[in-house]
Image (cartoon, rainbow, N blue to C red; front, top):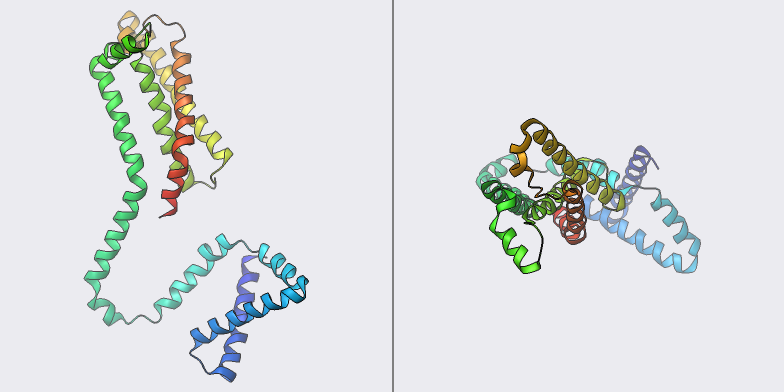
Length: 261
């Protein structure tokens, strides 16, 4: 059913129920409509046990309705407008401070609930990059400690940075796509988020390549390859792992936080 057909059906039913309420029950309009709608629903359920085709027909009718579009993009605006007709402006003005404070607090809380995860992930990413920039990636003490603990042949701190290069942008891209695109959570969203992270990593490797061409031997500290010929490929692989791990560990939590808005 189209949006206008749904609206026409609802208006017709509302008018019919209002007429029945006005003639028979004499209840306040809102209560009367609700009571008649509940009574009709109960009658359908009871009759469905006797005549199953009633339930199947009702199910077919309801499956034709896109409730997301109908409720959020259609009925909600009318309901808000109808509710606003009964507002007493003078009483609203008397409570303006309370309303403003509650609206502000609600907005801040909802923003903090969703943004807090991304906020701390971005801080963590900044710290990883800052430490690597201060020491240069091949000289970070943590990398030397890892080299001693795990028997690595090189300082692998840069791999932590490239893992984060996939992990943190994956959550950022995940939120942006869910908020601003038609994409819904699922396999295609995860695939596109992972592809974005790989593209970011590839762009970074090209920047390293251009820097090496421009600066020559002086770019060795910036590149941090430490003689490893497959450094660029392994960097992108670690970014891929980071993106996949982020989606596996945090996408469920992230989706729940986004629902609270």
